[in-house]
Image 1: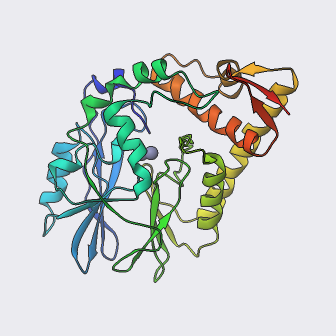
Image 2: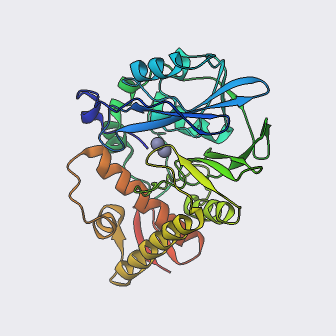
Length: 314
Ligand SMILES: [Zn+2]
Ligand SMILES: [Zn+2]
């Protein structure tokens, strides 16, 4: 979830600090984020046989609340696991430890945050110069870009299993504890927010990956979902279905618009997102989300894009 660079310059909002035991072996507390939405991040401390493990940590502006939360715990974590490559989840990780665990798929997001968008882009991809300008405020929220210790699908961290769930970010993972059905879902199954789909630069169909990730989670017996933003809840299958329906409707909207003739990404984004995006970062996120849906249609052989970035139905 890239931030709004204007908001990054505003005062950090206060979020009540509330360390509590969310379930056996899981301490959960909240840190503020210096962005508009979401304005907070829930971090989790897990007890594992290799010692305490912090899941996500926040960005610049989260430090005081994070320190206060960690001070209430018995032991300081020697490792941080980041659920994915968006900076609200790892911006200050290097100030805590040099052992940062993450899926290798996060590397493209870490590179984006440190070096800006790639110069080479697929046809129809959002304008690189506009992307760089819109997300230029990133650096203010980052203390350092971590080297990662790679973790992979199926790895175990004590009772917890790593589930690779790409789509919102190419390296997104969830942690699942089968013994009591608890899911740390990162940004995959957020309540109250619709996670944006981040187009993949390696030619993968990010929307297809996201829908597959939802199906995978919906098939698990889950008793409690602990999201990185928003309150805990229990009905993972219902939320997964809501998100699927949302994206299927968006695909229908795009197909309908393209029936009227070829359109550019900017034109199609005004169809899928009716809100007036006054912030450049919001506008670019809308462009990226729309691109991910168009790329899904292209890979399904329902749409084409020409060398000028104009989309049409096949
Ligand atoms: Zn995210
Ligand atoms: Zn997030």
